[in-house]
Length: 268
Length: 238
Image 1 (cartoon, each protein chain N blue to C red):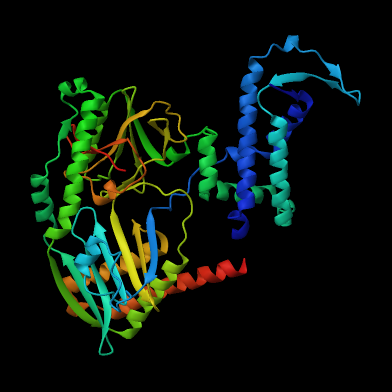
Image 2 (cartoon, rainbow over the protein chains, first blue to last red):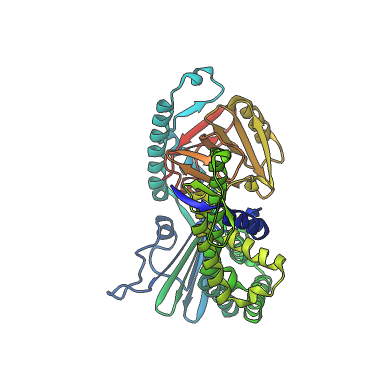
């Protein structure tokens, strides 16, 4: 047991009352932080072929052969994934859009092939169900869900379409990709997101390939994802009616927001 | 506000030392209750001050010294903090508390939890049993304004539902949780019972989405998808 001097304690208590009130203030956690992955790798393998090593199964399903100048993929919780990549061919910028068209069919068939054990909470019998029995069901379901996750990408089918876009639009998108990925930093403890969408932005920068994936993006990544999602959907809806100037306007506005943010950081 | 100060390790260390000191003081307060004050004898120190020595296992003096040392380091690096208004100083501390993983961990470690701030912007409904909460969830699922609802069932048999303004029909978030020994609890909340399971609603599909299955570090925590009619599929994430 240590002996302490009560006069010191009293003075400290007074000091604490005056200076530490702010430690009791923690009204709201930062809720913008979420799970993400940012990965930078060489764009090529030693063999001289494109480095696709860390593409996910879904990325490989959509863009299996090489890295586009930029790639965009969105995987929503309640419908099929879709996305696009931009490539350059004969000085032409091509936007190749793809979407899964049999998502529901695959999910339904997998649900039947790997059924889950469902507990009915209203059933009075369940009051008798032990923790162990419920844990056993949870383990069984987790195993089944793991199988569904593994098998699903193998069964999905894609429809594809492409349009030619201006170098202005392609370059605006590219600049925003590079800027947002480069400057993204995590703040705070991420929140656990349920459902929503998982979005991947991938681009080739010099001799590197940058890959950024995030759950339910917010802020500027949300704005960029909204523009990209709209573009991908439009290709399948009515590609003849795509008004490029509208997208260019939105991309320029986002770039302006980013430039202002940069200036603000520099001068304060 | 200067981002460099907000994100500095010196401010983080200062806040953590403050939390440590405040936590030690609360522990000391508990110890004081068990001491018979009448048995303590005052003595005169070498300066002629009347001093009472209190037996304690906690060295407040050491904690106070550590706190003052961190304060000195902080002010040496950012002397401008001495001259700014106290409101701005508080804002710096608040920003760092809100955004620092280290500070959040320290708050968990010191059990520095007094208010239910995660629930501040949320609509909470409390129920005596999980069956009672199911009736509420069924009502929500049938509503034309449906948004996903988080359900928390506690070991004492009670249940709570949690909805925030930013939840949608296709997305929601868990409130912050913490693990103590082998049990999970709501972080920074007045609910002291351990969580039996946590889940959220889907309108019809009992399968958790890929996002639901993403690792959140919730080892051993049972999670469920509640559809309707009391039906729930239970699963784990790792």
